[in-house]
Length: 114
Length: 110
Image 1 (cartoon, rainbow over the protein chains, first blue to last red):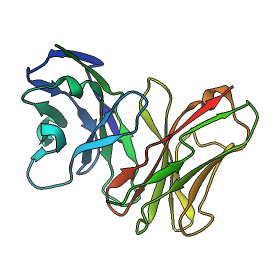
Image 2: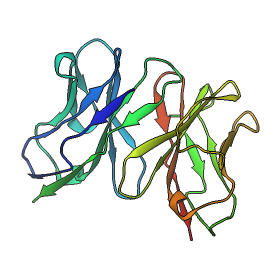
Image 3: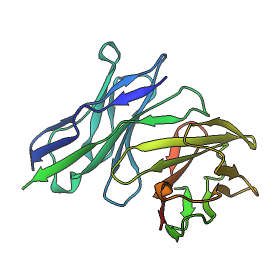
């Protein structure tokens, strides 16, 4: 069964500081990995995804993530956080079939200090 | 850019009532999904649908739930007799390859 662990429930960083959100997954084959951002009461916005190829993927809003198969990780990074990045971040793993469901982690709440 | 749409954005209902949540997937997509997110919790898979039948469902998707594609464009989730614990945000998604999520319907059961 596929699963996702986001070890950090809540992270606080200062504006302008770097950010890394951790994600570990469990999956029996090559995973499809995603990071979503959600503002309160809003829907899910896809930040970036990994299917295959280059293990460092670039996303929107200056985010990037690195797939490390040996560590079963897909950590999200941003070099300089903006106050508008404060939100809930979800990592998800999907199956390598078109009908495959996505399994989400519990999420990490990001607070940005001025 | 094509997008998944959902109606209504917010639905309030009384416990025991039936509700139907509607979704219009992206037009060339073949696979359809429903997820739910209880307030403050993670997004949970409910059901996937392909070729006019359920391809997978979770343990949450019990006999109170049903899905239908009544025409060529809509994809619906019906909850027959709502319970308080059905209060959540319900997300529809569709895919050819990667899933695209709709904005969600917030269901409040009183």
